[in-house]
Structures are given as structure tokens and as C-alpha cells.
Image (cartoon, rainbow, N blue to C red; front, side, top):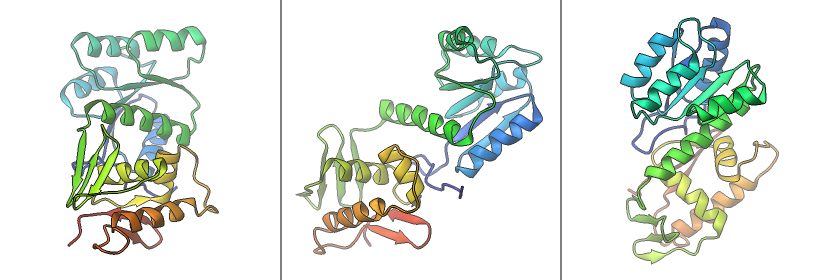
Length: 240
């Protein structure tokens, strides 16, 4: 999978993921899967160090091994929640029994993935947690140049003119505005806006982008804001 440069915050930095995993091969596998998808990953191999980094570091999600040699993963999770640390935690564990998954979620985990894991599933689950966080703290109005999106009213305007957007076009525009100035790939758009795995044979992304591009430019009366990056994806930026 090509690197997904679109996995960034609206302020322009990549999402930061802390991986607490004592098994070197498992840590390497997790790092490779997440970095390939465009995340900024930091790995630590002990529960003690993981707890300190989770408390002091500014991470968007913590991927936490359930069984660590020095501090049990659930003890780390309980400590984080008891001190008011609300960073989403995805538990990664070889313990697949239902009661173990329930224990992890009751301890304050936000998701639970069992080993061996699939890299696509892991990144998809992380994206769900990140979208949940973004929605909880997201502003109700997004603006890029003279393009304004009111997420509470589901209304988009360019230079004061309301854009007549279909639901999928609105979702696509909102996603691109939240990642303004960043190249977003077709894969990322398909998996984030459509919630499907990308099929390279489909032209659905290009079709919707074409319609959206025309509407945002007010049918050519104003400068284009959505541009194609050849062989990579698209970028939305303020008109010059």
C-alpha cells in the first residue's frame, strides 16, 4: 500500500500513534502497517515507559499490548483513565476470549484487536477512533479561502453563494476541507468517505471529484480549488 499522506490533522501534522509492544517482531509489524498508511509512529517496549509516554506525550491514539512483562496492559489503561487521560486506546492482544475482550473494554479501552492482526483492519479501526475524536472536538464551521462549510447546517458556500451538493459530495467536501493543503489519495477518500476498501478499477472517486470541482468553482465562474495530483490523488487549497 502506498503511503497515505492524507492521514493528517487539519492543523497540518500527521496523527501520532504510540505503540506499546514488547515483542520486537510484532512491534515492527505494527509500525510498518501504520507508517505505510501515513501515521507518525513511536514504539516503546516496556509497560513502564509506555505509561510515561502516554501520560506526557501528545498522542492521538495509543496501541497497547495486553500482556507486557513489567506492567499489565490493563493496569496501564486503568491508570490512564484514573488520572483523567482520555486518549483513545486500542488494545492489541493474543487473548481472544470474549471475557478478555470485555475486560479490556470495561477497563477503558476504546477498541480491541486480537493477534494475529490484519494491517488493513488495524488502520481502519484506528481511523474510526480518530474520526470519533475529530467529530467530538471539531468546529462547526470550516473555511478555506472564500469557501465556507457549516457542518451544523450541512451547508457549503463559495463567495456567499450556496452550493447545491448531494450528500456524498458534501461528505467528500467536508473531508477534503478538514485536510486542506494536503494531498489525499483515492484510497484514503474511498475508505474514509465511502467506508469501503478501494477498488483500483472503479472511477467513482474521479466522477464525484469532477462534479464537486465544478460546483465549488461555481461552474467555472471562479478559480478552481480542487486539483488533481497526477498518479497520487487530489488536493483542495484556497484559490490564488
